[in-house]
Length: 284
Image (cartoon, rainbow, N blue to C red; front, side):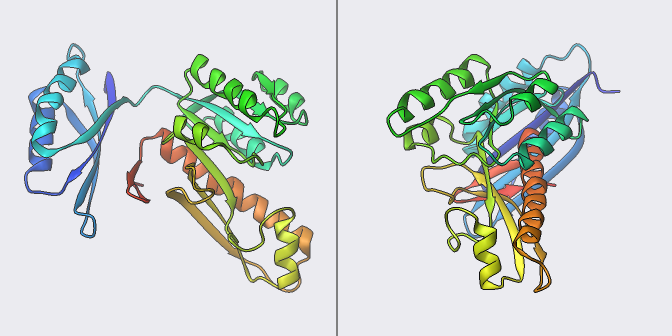
């Protein structure tokens, strides 16, 4: 059994010899490659690699990192090495719709997602008891146009104090400021229905029902200052028909949103996502 378990991710301009040099470096330190996935993007000329590897007891990961510091400039590598056993620390932001929150709480509690939820932030108090039932701190941070700056500062204070790895917007119905988006770049995921840019605003599934839509979907993406336009991580759809009323569509949409968000969070905490410009590479 591996004593030390790690995940390497890297992105760099595509050229020959990348895998050869990486595998040789790991072999030098007696590293055992458990799984490896790679992708070369012909359009951008970028190469992406994820390697799950183990080191024997007595071989320090710092030795491996030191050699990567030497190797990386030769290939212009943007790389990271993560402890695969370490659980990601999540902060969930939610408003009044709790289906995604409830789903994530259950999946994390049942160890379907390799993470721990260390806090829940909301601008409403609806889910205080739900947080209490899971023994998770609940932070009630109401927000108005006048208090938005101080409220977001309070959110970032929690992120910094609790050493949060990922902020999850689980139907958090507030638009984040460009400053907060910048502070959380690459470590905040949002979920929304996939009707956008149609059916904006309140009760989108009722608007969709009025137009007779035939497909309902959801999109999870990284948060950027461009509203709902960050790099897409995960999507799903389901067909609906004329026999379903607006409440039926809302239920279908809620189920899809929950599934899509949980898959996106799992991919992130397992270090399966590499950003490729305005897109993502998601290794399965």
